[in-house]
Length: 434
Length: 122
Image 1 (cartoon, each protein chain N blue to C red):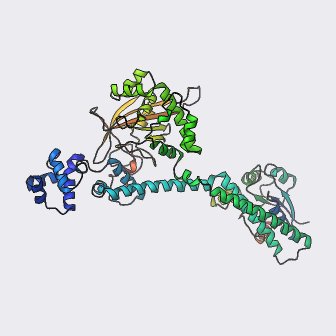
Image 2: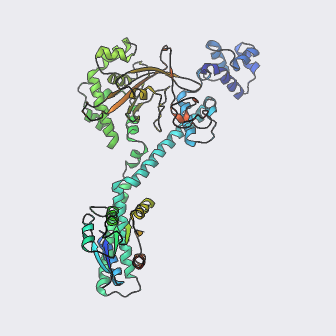
Image 3: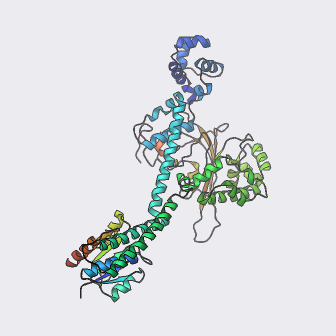
């Protein structure tokens, strides 16, 4: 049932929450109790002044009654349920979000925190297992301890040792104890490196994207033809792998700026109603560049919100610019039905597709996707293919046809999806064969 | 002259301690510190038993063990592996490759001596 048709249920919940009688509310807003009853059971549509009056009588925001909870919040709550993997009341997520928005936001925040901590734990585990510096330091410590143990047990053993051997093993123990002190100090200082924890809390991609979120992905420092990419990256404060990724992103961004100067590009976007195909023709520039540039328009210039996702040939998301109304999971795989992945099977063929997300709010989004080789072609060398997708949530009008997609299989309620790769969590969907 | 033990280990003070306790127990101990040339040493000095460290400069003890078991001259020589890596998968790998025993550092001298005696008797 569309979200608006559930406005009645929300009115009923809010009224009962506040302990108000149906007749009292009906009288306050000037309608009959029976008409309010029909509204509360979703048998009459409601909007405009009457909705505003009822919202005032119930002391709630009218938008909360008409639209329900934010779909992004709902997706995050379902992700939280997926993390637990138990019999959470997933079907009541929207009710929970509508009635207890503060608690729901807390659940979503804790879910994000858990995911970050899991990533950190995995990174630490990987580090313990594979970090050559740490492995070398531990090996040095254990080898030295072994040598001390062997030498000392000879000295305290029951058998007599002549003085030369005694002196020799004492000297060995002394030398090994100095080595042990040095290697222990080195190990401790390595484990206490000040930036170690922060670096491991998120992947390098996430650290870069989190930094870009501060500027809503529009990098005004790079909008000039004389922009200094090196200085820009240095000023970011990032280091290591995230800085390397930001450097690559900034170099690409500067090239996009040079090909598509901001003022002319903004004019073209508005003139062509944000149709990337037409804009690409006007500038004679490749579509991926147009999509990247559209996703990075200045946030304060009244452009429609747009998200961006980039993946490699393996379908791994390598760049995500989130946008309200279209959740993009960073942990676990995304929905295989996204046009982003469809484009991988048709390199060079742009795809324009309206998609409908599942759930009670059934939000729509217009997606433009194209997969291209990002390296020059060479004989006998497979191209490095990259797919890019621009997402425009809640587009004006409708293309008429739309494709049902999801966010991720674990939280997807679609029961008849042939592309499902893993069961959904309990309460989300009827389980289908995989 | 006692039976011959070849100790392939790169830690000088461990070499000295093990050599001392085994020599005192009657074994003739030869030592070698480099993984890359370890097989040459084994073939040039056929030992009755080998004590082999896993982490050696140049070549891993696992690789050397694989070569030992693949060579007709050394495939039956008892091998005791020493390692600072006590993970179960390392022990499994050593036993799969044909080690007779696997000992984790830090070990006790008595343990080493007793296992050498047992392996030689077997």
